[in-house]
Image (cartoon, rainbow, N blue to C red; front, side, top):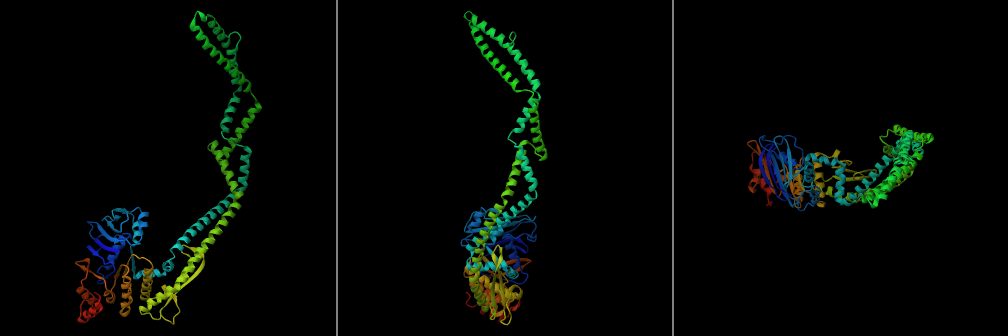
Length: 549
C-alpha cells in the first residue's frame, strides 16, 4: 500500500506531499493541470528511465520519495535476493541531479534501477487507457487464466521441465555439430592416430634419447678420457692406487712411533678404496660406451621421428606433442562412440519431452476448466456496465510447440451484439468497451491474487452516465480489499466514497490537495457544469455524494 508520496523539483511540481487513503483515492483536475505528471514521477520512482525532462530548477536535485506498507505482499524473497533489509514499511527514494545522474535507494541502501523496477512491479500496477492494449498480448491472456486457476505450481514445474528439455536439445545440437565436423576429418584423424600409435611415444623419452645420442656421438673421446683415467689410477709402477697404497703401508709400519701416521693411513685407505671404485666404474663405462654405429643410427632415427611429429603438428614441446596425441585419440574415440552416445542422449530427450508435454497438457486442462468461469464472470460484469448483449469467449487451442507459457494459444473473443459474430477482442472492441473488459478482468484477478496498489488512469474513458456510475461502483468494491488510485474526469466515478484529491495549477506550478466534504461538492459540480458552477450542478453533486460519508 502506498502511504505517502513526496515530489520535489519535478517538471511543473516545485514541492508537494500526498498522504494516501488505504482504500479508494479519487484524483480529479482540469486537463493540463498535471495529473499525468504525478504518474510520471511515480514511474521514475519505480525504475523508469529519466528522459531528461525531470528537472524543473537546474540549480537543485529532483527528489521523489514514497513510503509503502508491504507487510501483506509476501515479497520478502525479493529483498533477500537483492541483499536488502526487509521491513514491513519501506521508503523508496530516487534522486536525479541537474547533470542527469540518477541514484536510487530502498531504505538507506543504494540500488540499481533494475532492482527498483523489479520491486516496483510488486508495489504498484499503473493501468491507463493506453494499457487496454495489453489485452492484445497473449502472455496477458494466458497468465490471467493461470492466476484465476492458481496454476503457479503447475507453471513452476513446467518451466523447470522445459529448461531441462531445452538444455538437452542444446547438448544434442552441439553433439551433432561436433560429430559432423569430426567426420569430415575422420580419415585424416584415423591416419594421425595410427601414426602416433606406431610411434609409441613415452613420457620423457625425447630428453633421454637426446642425452643417449649425445653420449654415443662422443664415444671415442669419452673412451679416451676413461682410458687415461684408468692408466692414471692403475699403472703398476706410477698409478695413483699403487703409490697411495705404498704410502698407506709405510705409515701403518711407523704407527707405533708416529701416532698421527695411523690416522693418515686410515684416511688414505678410504681414498684408495674410492679410487678403486672410480677405476672400476671407468672400466664399466668404457665397456658400455662403445662406438656402436647401429645403435647410434637407431637413436638418431628415433629422434628424427619425434622431431618430425613435433614439426608436423606444430608442437611447442615434447609434452605438447603428447597432449596433442591424447586429443586426437579422444576425438577418434568420440567418433567411434558417437552413435551410442547420440542414441542415449536422444532417449533422454524423448523422456524429457514426454514429461514436458504432460506438464503442458496439465496447464491446458486447468486453463480449460477455469475458462468457463472467466467467461461468465466477465459477461456478468459487462452487463452491470450496460453491455446487455455482450459475449466473451475464451478460446484455448493446444498446440505442438513449446513456449515459456506452455503449448496453448489463448484468444479472447468478444462481441457487444448478439447479431455479430465474436472476434478477437483487441480488434473488435472499441476504446470504451476495452476499458470495461479490462476492469472486469482486473476485478477478477484482484479476488484471486494479492495485487499491489492499482492506479487507474482514466480507465473510464469512453463511458458516461449510468455506465460510468456502475464502473465507479466496481472500482469502489475493489477498493474495499485493496488500495485504488483512480484518475477520472467523470463525476459519477469521482463521487464514490473515498479520499478525493484535486490536481491544480497555481502560478505555473502543479499542486495537489485533499478536498473537504464541502469542497467535494464544488468539485463534482464543476465536473458537471464546467467552470461556471450552476445551482443545478450543485444540487446534482449533492445527490451524487449523498450517503457517501
